[in-house]
Image (cartoon, rainbow, N blue to C red; front, top):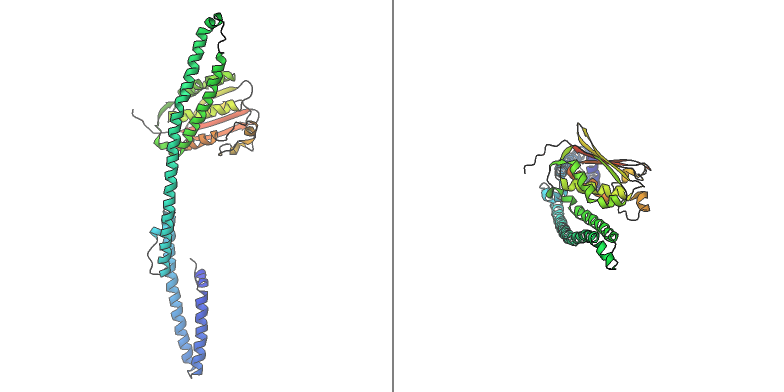
Length: 354
């Protein structure tokens, strides 16, 4: 608090004192007081007023400096009303009480919202686990039915029946996999703010994880005549499940924004700071002006407008999970020539004992 601001705030009081001093001087002169006595009285008055203003200013300045220090040093600033320094001023006590009541209401509202979000998150997680049962059932039925058709195709032809083409079950299985991927995205999004509750950091072979992701999507890759080259001899300290989800989302994006003869090149590079996983495709690429925004929530860009199935959530969720895991995630792209996505795993000292 500046002295000039304090004096300006006391402007009406100072004006009142000035009027009173002039009135007192006129009264003294009218009642026969000498000019010397009148000046002496006014001087004492002025000194007392100055001393009072100075003491009051120092007290108020100290109070607000302490309040500002408290505000700067606490993380939950809505608790300021509980931590304000004591003051004998009535207005300070009234303000403090109003702040306390206001903050109490704010805290209660925050807790209510947190409880609602927790209930919603738990419901989503429960729903995801429930919905995965029929998804897995459909996948098993399609797989078993395709195998049965291969065995019984000849017998069905001899009996004059028209067996269902195995391609129909393959199509159903493919659509079922899409549903499963979207369900997984919902689950990981619900857990993205609490990754620390569901991860296990240990030494992980990137080649194993990449091959698992490719195997999981082998039908999609075959359908799109994709070729994949994997060269990931390095291991890193991370969580297998979360990295598998991130790589799966990147793979789905590559297939979604593909060109003919999709080629994937997945490799690792070891540097002093850690290991970098490079996921490269020869897809349609990303425009230069859109590249800084591809990790924003809901951003689809010109490619997304051409592809009506785009949600703008895949890369956003990948970036968010990477930040929770301490992984740098960035992209380079040339429009019409493909995209490179980089996951930089830092050197880690985490040790997991099974």
